[in-house]
Length: 178
Length: 350
Image 1 (cartoon, rainbow over the protein chains, first blue to last red):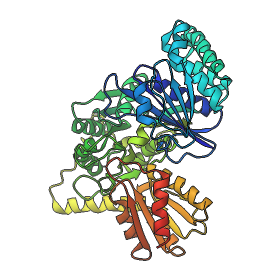
Image 2: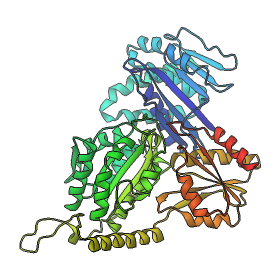
Image 3: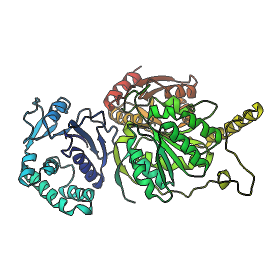
Image 4: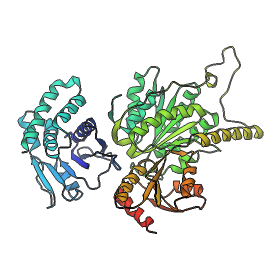
């Protein structure tokens, strides 16, 4: 098993945090993992992305030329990555923001109104964790329990209050998927 | 010890501090900025630690020279163009027989090039890099864990041989995160007699490389060579991977070697008998294992993210004993295992 995911969105949507948190959780489940942020000549307000590879054996390349999963938090991310997804791959779209849909018939699509759900929870900033709830449920890469424990250790003790809203956000995304 | 998820740049900084590095000077350049950043934050928390953002790469390496002469475990880091600037200082460190660790997270070149992962600095790293007859030990990690381990080893090696040690990573090794367990640091073994700390009542001492008398200069050169010969004998490191019953052996280092392993695993699944020799020390180069392997295997394929530099060392090692093919992608391109596998199959079917 080797799964590569690209997380992409606007700078500020917590895209790198999505990748870092799932990488952390995968490590805690004893899996091999690499996390690679994009570090090109980025511009303010532009698209940020990172690639996470999770495997039960050594990972050759941390780069995903054909990602299995793409999590697109904004429209430009969908445009940028839809041609690269592997045949039979899965899109997770932040459907409250992304208006377009993939031009590919050979992919599975999850439409998660992550930004909308986060706003309803009173905290638009946790849209990334809402999406992670849906992502963890659908992909089963790691258990929900491991993910939440990883998130808690990343946020640290000083952010107990933040953990509460993140926990709610995760559950909302998790429950959104059947 | 706990596993932590950490980037190569940070892991290198943390390993250096754990190994007792107490002086770091650097100047920002992508893709190694996070190493300088890490040192800025953490060196001041280490007892007796000094961090300096120097006014230039040249200043940084010369500050390292001074700190090393004064007895500190010292380190600087940069990426390709910045490492070019440091060569004068590295040559002086080698001439003065001072320990120091220099990290190069290579990017595309020549010139300012770009900021993407590349392996174009192999010649510079393994041939000394600056002027004069000297060598540096060159360590080439292919994972974040190995980068952390080799950083610790680098300090011990540079003390043992009183010679600069270069860690040759690339943009990918520096930027990516992987789980790491930090090793236990070993106590420093470095004689006080090499340390300049003021003559006091005793005789004054100098550390200098300006030797105007030709015979004495020649003697110094041969003394360095004797040291390098010991390093050639004792410090070669490499890994072999699935070379048993192989018909074709890939030779690759650093991030390229990981990609090669991915390609080899695929090809082995489809019945191709291919394996890998991965040099971990680029100097001293593992020539002997390549020669030994050539006794049972007739062809090799060198794979580098350059136009072919280590290729020359492989040919020198083989002295015409076997066929050597080459596949390379310079300029910041990181080939996929699938792309490399195609190149391997072509070579295999020759």
